[in-house]
Structures are given as C-alpha cells and as structure tokens.
Length: 625
Image 1 (cartoon, helix red, strand yellow):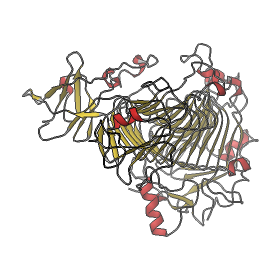
Image 2 (cartoon, helix red, strand yellow):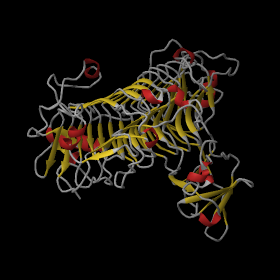
Image 3 (cartoon, helix red, strand yellow):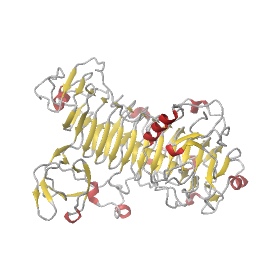
Image 4 (cartoon, helix red, strand yellow):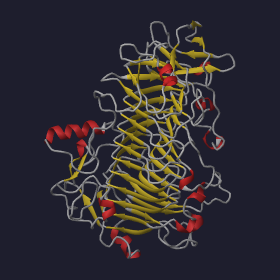
C-alpha cells in the first residue's frame, strides 16, 4: 500500500537495485546522479587468466592432491595448491563445491575463478548418520564443534533477556540449505531450530533428514592470510587477490587477514603494514556464524562483492589506511538477533585513516547498523551510497539519548568525515555523528530517515573500553560539523523529527557551543497531515537540564538560533510532486519540484568526491536534470 505521494512504507521489502533497473528500462534514461544504480555485487563474467610473474596452479573440487595442477585438465586439490603456491603464483579454481577450510598461507597469492565457472567454498560437511528418537527429534554425533562464550564487554544483565548464551556458539546447521537457529535444549527444537549437547557432541534437529541435505559447520575459516611462517615459507608483506569465488557456511569467519591490532593510541605508521594491498572482487560471502571477513592492512580494496547473512558484522576492517569499498552489496547481518554486540554490516575500527566507502548498496539490516566508522578513524569518505531499511523508524524516539540505535551511516569517536551524495531511505537514523569532530555532510537525500548528531561526556577516564575515547576528539572538541544542501523528507507514516542535534544532559551548562559550525541551505519536506510534528530537536539550547529543545518549524528555530538556517527552506505538501518516481525509488527531483534552485556552492573538495554534480547550487544527492 502506497501511503504518500513520494515514498513506500517502511516495512515493504523492495530490492532497490531491481527498482532502479526497472526505472532505467521504463524511462530509457541513464540514472545519472550519485548512487550509480549498479551493477552492485558480483558481476557474472568470464575471467581471463591474470597477468602474473609466477605460475598457474589449477584446482577442482575432485582434484588430485598428488598433481601439480599445471593445466585445467589435471587439477590438484585446493589444499595442495595453497601449500604449493608462493608469491606471484595464481591459483585458478574450477567450478563446483569445495568443502574445505583452514587454508593458511603467508604469500601474495592470487585466487581466481576459472573462465566463467563458479567455485563455491563451503565450511560444512554433510551429516548423513542420523538416529530417530521417535519423539520428533533426530540426532547425530559431530566431531567438529565450535563453542564460544560472549566477549567480556557484553552486558548479560542488560542483554541476556533478549540473547540466550547458546547464541554465542559458532556452530551452524543447514537443512536443505536453510539456516536453522540455535536452541537452548531439546524442548525448543523444531523444524527451524537445532540444539547441540557439547558434552556428548550430539546435534539435535526437528525434521526427518531422510532424503534431505543436512550440513553442519566443520571449519571456522576458509582462507587465513597469516603473518607467521608457513611450511617453511617466511611471510612477505603482499596481500592476496581473491576474485570470483563464493564463500558460505563457515563457523566464525570465511576470510581473515592477520596484522597488528593496536591496544592503545597508535601512530598511523605503526599499524597496517604487515599485509598490504589485499584485493577482493566479485566474491560473495554468506552465512558465517560471526563475521564474513576480518581484514587488516593498508591499501585494501573490496569491490563488487555481496556480503550477507552473518551473525554479527559483515566486514570488519581493523587498523588500516587507504582502503576502498565500492559497488558492494551489504545486507542481512545479525541474523541471530544478538543484542548488546552492536554489529554493523561494515565496521571500520581502531584508528583507520582515509577509508572510502563509495557507491555501495546497503540495505535490509533491521537488527544492525549499516557502515560504522568506530574509534579513532581519521579523514574518512562516505559518498554516493544507497542506504535503505536499516533498523526500524516506526517507534517513538528517546529524546534523552541517541543510542542505542541502528544507523545507516555511523561515525563515532573519530575526526573528519565527508558524507556526501548518499540516499537514505526508511532508516532508524539515516546517519549519526557521535562524539566526533569535523563531519562535512553535504548534498544527501534523506527519506523517512533522521539526521542525527550528538555528544556525551564519555572520555578515557573510567570508560568501559578504556583507551577508545582517547583516540578521538576531547569532549570539548566535538564540534566543527557542517550540514548543508541536504534534502530531508518525510511522509505521513513518519512521526519523528527530521533532525536531532543532541547533547547529553550531564553537559548542560558546561558545553554551550553548538556542535555544527554550519547548518544551512537544507530543504525540509513534511506532509501537512501529521499534526504537531517536531521539525528539529536542538542541543544545547540553554543551560538547564534537559538542554535539548524541540522546534516545530524553521521560523520558530530561527527566532532563537539566528546564526543557523537563514537560507534553509521548509515545505508542507499534499499534492505537489517532489521526486520523479519515488514509487520506484527514483529520488531525482521532479522538474516541478520547488527545491530546484535551492542550496549553495559545493566546496571543491566535496565536488571532487561526487559521482556527478551541477555547477549550479542544488539540494539533495541528485543534481537536477
């Protein structure tokens, strides 16, 4: 059911990419603008043999482990190929399913699909020896188990009611390819769950496995690029290239690139240097019981990948600089609904410099954040991304706090970010800037998604995570944000303010300077049928507690905050078109849109990061056509 003139309901499951392609076909136009419209994720193609100074080693799922793999017709096993390969070699994988893992190497090796074939690496074995207990349960003994306890920082008293401890174990069971959730004991087992007795190694399921495929995890990693010596080979500093391969059903993670993880404040030159230049392209990673990939090392590139169905993070980038994530699909993580772990589809963590996320599709993350720059990151870039259905935006917000929340884009305890040219649709928060400085938020389109900025008194003194806050700006330095040329729209289903600039009550009267240094030239669009809706929450406002004040209109806000929003505009619509084709998620401006001609000149630094821009000022992600 369409409930407004320009958006779709929050709970409608629409694949954005499909909508954009339909729009292309119907209009015959190029989707010029910021998010490119794709293709996102792996692109089916024929892979030519790469240029390499080493040798080619061919593998197949049924390859001969005694072979040297010198041709596609005489392939070796993947396990043997990894042992044979040295820096500069290319391992070429024939199509089919490889049930393998623990592939440990320390060289700059290339892994690539053969021709147009699809190699699939699976971390499960097939379970075929089942016993019928006669009570709706079937059991098998399993030797490959991965029990795990929650991290020490997890608060059981806060989250234990929502998250039973068995959810932290890393074992997974699949019935005819369908993921089963874990259960606490035999009585909770049904057709959608499984239970493991770790003392006896017994797996319980609630469906008859006869003539069905049941798979249980047997490996906790597919590829491990270690910094240790392996098979007498000393590590080089070159990262692998992985291209055209699918990874699925691994306990814990599918890929890990090892490297130094700072446990305190670290200079840029002191980390990210163990493995440099990893490239992952046209790969899919799904159903990992924790994270799809832990990645470390400078100059990493992930492009045209599809990361989905993980239990915590999708991608975890640690202590690395100059990384690029581009044209990927990130969706459906935290599939076990673990509360209190605060996952993200992509977490960029611990003093990363100049990490760029450009033109990605980030969607369908009801229990997770989207992309989160967390702790000590510097000079990040988040541009031209499409972000949709992150969290829920239908419940009443907590006006005393921004957190916990699910954020399409999240920048925390960090310094310097450009967020420009993005589209946020039906998110809890479109973006959140928290305890950070220097965020430049230009020319984004928000649809039913709040723009939020906040600061607290959190510091390194007595913090639960010890040194983390020390990597970012001090409490009194969490300022310098610029919010300009954004188009922020809401339909009648959206009951929230459009913007929330928040300060913790403990800081009321202590920090009175505004967090943004510029908040202007934005366009706010609301439907007149939502009576009494606040437009903007602003803090600090005054010295009392609480020091966040609600404003119902720009006129009301300007009366008390003369410096801000002099050139912003506000519209209440009923039948005036705003977007060209929002029913197909086309948020280009209609030729009759009253916001055309609004905005101010875009700084050169921002323009250079946008996929396309107009020489004339405009608001929102898309320049008028």
